[in-house]
Amino acid sequence: MNLHTDMTVNRITDEIWEIPMSEKPGMLVPARIYATKGILQAMDSGVFDQVTNVACLPGIRRYALCMPDGHWGYGFPIGGVAAFDVHDGVISPGGVGYDINCGMRLIRTDLTLADVRPHLERLMTELFRKVPAGVGASGFVRLSGEEFGRVMTHGAKWCVERGYGWHRDLVRMEEGGCIEGADPSIVTDHAIKRGINQLGTLGSGNHYLEVQVVSNERIFDPVTAAALGITGNEQIVVMVHCGSRGFGHQVASDYLKVFEKSMRRYGITVKDQQLACAPFRSPEGQEYFSAMNCAANTAFANRQVITHQIREAFATVFGRSAEALGMELVYDVAHNIAKVERYPEGDLVVHRKGATRAFGPGSPELPETFRQTGQPVICGGSMETGSYLLVGTDHAVRDTFGSTMHGAGRTMSRAQAKRTVRGAELQQQMKQRGILVKAVSMSGLAEEAGLAYKNISDVVESVDRAGITKKVAELRPIGNIKG
Amino acid sequence: MAWTFRFLEEIALADIAFEAEGESVEEVFRGATQAILESMANPSTVSGVWERAIEQSDVDPSTLLFDWLSEVVYWKDAEGVVFREAPLALTREGEVWLLRARLIGAPVDHQTQELHADVKGVTKHLYELKQTGNRWKVRVVLDV
Image 1: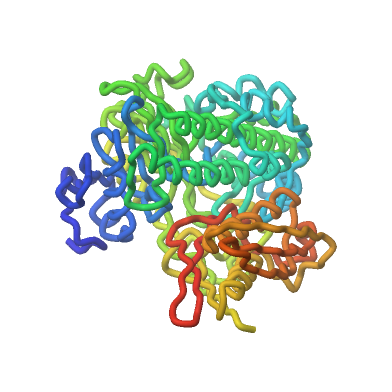
Image 2: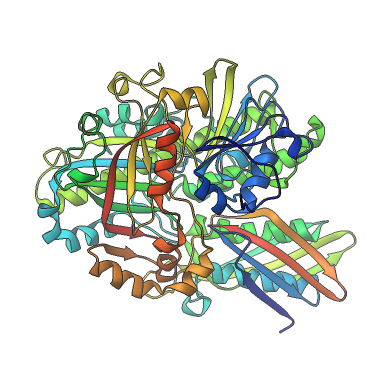
């Protein structure tokens, strides 16, 4: 088999591949990659190198994992999942990612394509106006330092208290949109100043707001879809992909510096500087965990404020309240985070970096709303090809620390994408295909062209066949906002 | 001009990488600074109504350059600005390298400026400042 690595990669099943501990000195557990043979063969060499580096980190349990949308990242690969014992294991910002609690949110509506198509231009213009995107953008919410501290500790709950959302939204978010244990006093002034004006902004890169349509023929599990509010019949839904913006990045950068110094004191060596880490129970590890939770809550709040703006935009354009339009949240899920979760081995710090929690119906952690369906999993594809709604499984809890993929995964560099296609041309081509795109940066638009990504359907198929998530519906784009 | 920079394509699939080089450490600082400014916006489309004087020092020029580039990203977010230029001078006093720079730019304006990526931070991935012969070179990967 032709792979971008010289390492031995053994087939476990058609969708699971294992790199044994003998392949790199210092590996404490094997590495496992979830992918079809074709996806595995296309994976860059960084995935194999990085997932085996992760397998060398102290306190790791069972396997270092990589999902099928995996590609090279900083320290951990994107698509990486690793669980460390809370007693003798570590926590690593490289296993969370710079954009802490980057995540996905899906909002349903009662509208259909026939309702929206005649108003799409106005709707996208209104969304583009209400949800700032791109470099240097600031949101409409003005906060004092004290109030921003409450955002860090209360997350989406703060938004609902302030009128930016509905109480019932909270049950449809991972952790209810508020993770305990966030301590604003240990967040640096630099991080606060970077984040205080960014609530309600999208950012740039691969972040987006997308208006999508769900057709009957692309619903794979009608019962689960209906339970989640997805009814088909050309139904309109809205997807949001963004995170904690500059605030989360500054938290990650601040603690990478702290950990680079403290690793010597704890006698930890790592294969890559970007894997800097600290024992989870150490003062440095606990401080990072707490600061990371501040950023995670800020990201929940960011997506909630954006949801409020989306609802306002729809209400303006369609002349009815968001409630009358049935704009309920389907779910909000993080894909860059570390959390303490209980498994047969005990309490573990599960790192998911470009990977999504995927708890099955049997998980006691899920609220009653999802006990029949399993936890919704939202996976974003490229802006040209579509996205997926899936649900978690008890298989995932058993096999992958309750984790699955998060998106399509890039296959082409940003520079190469820009050489291949021009932003303005792409915008025009997409318009002809019925997808209206509003973008702050035309070069940024070209960088996100569909040709730069894996085929998300192949990626979704592989996790479905592996049994770690089940397909519910495919969501096709008709309008996209990019930074 | 005693410095150059070029964007690298194959080492950061989802992000931006560049290499800057010059005849001195100071010239490498200038090349790397220009590269990060251009990653955010076309400097020629940005006016100079906003300005900050910045001084930083470190015994290690590699750390100093990393911190300086990170500072540029910080001001972009903290003040919502992009940059036209950043004139700088680097001196050495004993063991300590001292950077005196001015960041000059303007608040973000989608109508008048050609905006590029929202750089979120400078990473340590493959980060290296080194001297080869009489040339200095740095490789930087930006998270976007």
